[in-house]
Length: 413
Image (cartoon, rainbow, N blue to C red):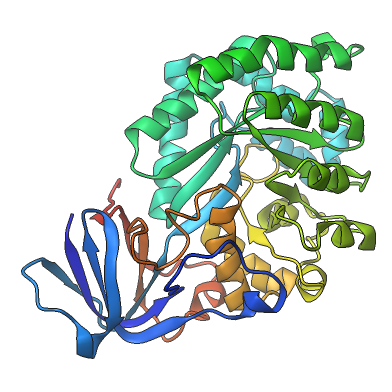
């Protein structure tokens, strides 16, 4: 699709050359062009600049007067493929039960796994595609989707095959992560090592054979999997060319960040509990810290200390954690707003975290995350707004007018 956007009030996240990620003070810099044009050719960003230099063309033209344009959101942490929901646990939590108490009573991840195991692959796909279409309409143009609600060989593979089918059938960029080590299933309750060896010896060879995953992940947390378990899973992933990611420091800090850095994990995600030692361990590394503010909002747990992390020179990405138990929402607009409102990130920092740094956390920086020539034309065109500050300011009313993936306007509803 070839298209010319003209009279763009402000073109946001303009980067002449691609870069890895933004850290510390760099995160407060958000380059823009006011009164701009943007040219899309064959689904890619081919040119952009000031309106006074706008080329003449016979391409379809969209007048963006009063509107702003930015790269689509890059959501590097979701569990979007799941069966049913857990709205009953939502009520239990309102009545005073903790996340841990709900899990002990048979709820939580094990509850979702039971539902998924009983759901056919076709039905799981049909439920999940609705969620995927929803987040695309909300401006997400790249997403990572994890397994982890199967917890048996057949169910985990079913989940990963659904992700692969979504990737084939939709224009959004999708990355898949194998998170078999999300919880210990009840049949392995007293044999965690047996479960881990099943993941490694029985599932990983099939994942490699069918090309079902890009990354491997583990929930490194008290009551779930230890630092030693994390080391085992990350090493196994390397043998199958799966780069590591870790759910870590959500409720307790037990050294998971350090083992992630030692194993060159692409990202460490959650980070609600951050010690000075954890921040120091991440300095000058290639491991991206990822915060999940809507999870903190939904569970009423602490938010990642974004201000402290950025002020100590770290990078930070933002993601939704879309899942049925702790974040039943894939709305990146809400994530960006909540990061500003509750984590004291500036709009510039939050937009950088939800675009460039999110793209890095999925190994997709060559395709998405900025307005750069040669990248995919995955774009958000806003409604008429007075500044990009309005995007997080208007937290309950998203500012999106149109969404484009590879230069094509997307309409699902």
